[in-house]
Image 1 (cartoon, rainbow, N blue to C red):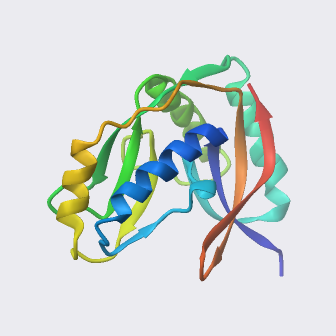
Image 2: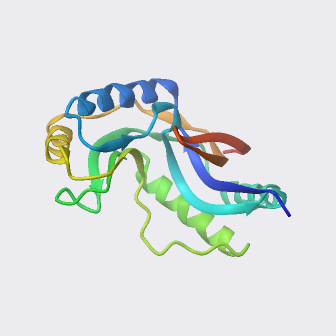
Length: 187
């Protein structure tokens, strides 16, 4: 049987942005809502989730992405704003958004989606929305206060440069997913 990796394509963020998100999460955690918070070291910007992929295909995926983004120059991103999916009344996901660089991320995600569909991966049905997941809501207990608090607090990080795209491996554990870089594509 061939080894498979739970795989996704992402932009990893700098440590100072992780620290700002960690501080923001701590303020929200004071409400003791029933939310499974994403560990700051695991927070990233997902461009495409691939699911279980044979390990032997990772190089082919990286080559395809490299070819697709070879004309994309490094760009700047600012993490700013907050939101929920699908909405504030019944949130399932809490997130911080991307302001500067959102259009470029959307373009890159679209290019990658098209390229990888040529390798047999299903195209995305939903429009791409650049965000970083803070937590997943398990029940409505305390969630109203968290959403109110998120909306009341201003959230913005210093801009950072995106110079690479990573093909990531996700290993699910009881304490949460652990991520590692399988391939790195330089812009």
